[in-house]
Length: 284
Image (cartoon, rainbow, N blue to C red; front, side, top):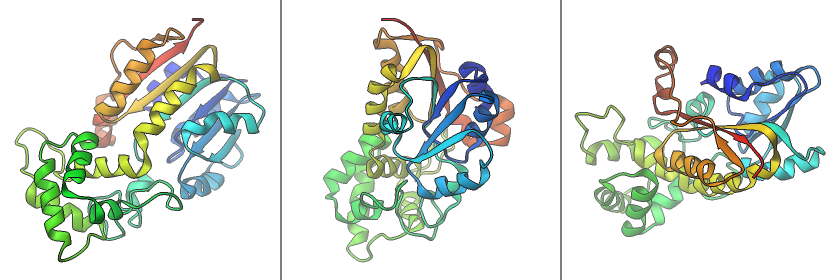
């Protein structure tokens, strides 16, 4: 949703904007090209591979990179001597590069490890949860974070299968999920989608990070500054909607979430789940 982001954040020369989810760098590049001269973009990502690629692909642009969780952007801004910024973008989806990395397990058919961590140097991989959690705890996790109504059936099947062979790859888990989850005649998503979402949210503490950044955002954005957040499932979107609506320091600019246009959907079917909400910082 690049066009929509540029329209609503309105980057202009001299502005300072935070891209809290660098990913493939497309948003950062477009923003940086529009804030020069005099401005710059502060881009964060938890994934060290993303930072390493961006150091090459964004060279020459006014971009300051930091390997950090977006909920810690305050500390990053303090380190570079910035008190408040003109805009913040959070694109909460996975980048194409992450999906293509077989060693991370984000793709259901990857032969690599069932990991799902953004930063492989911290926390536990998804395989640890799948192989060690009780059936009850697994079912609760998959239901809460994946909104998967077949969570108990899935958890029982995982516990039964791991007795013989522990889960080590994304493909191995995806094959089980396709076997035990009935395909919906209406939905077109892969039967593995919701369970993988749940595991990814858990190992990265994604909702906790989102809650923390939503709480801290108002104090870091100048009056008249804007925040744009792209979410990809209802657990995220609900939090963003409530944070913007309930805090008098925000004026909601998008009464309903914006969605991707048909042209973008043709180029990138993954955008079908994207929802963009925008708010402006106002005096309380």
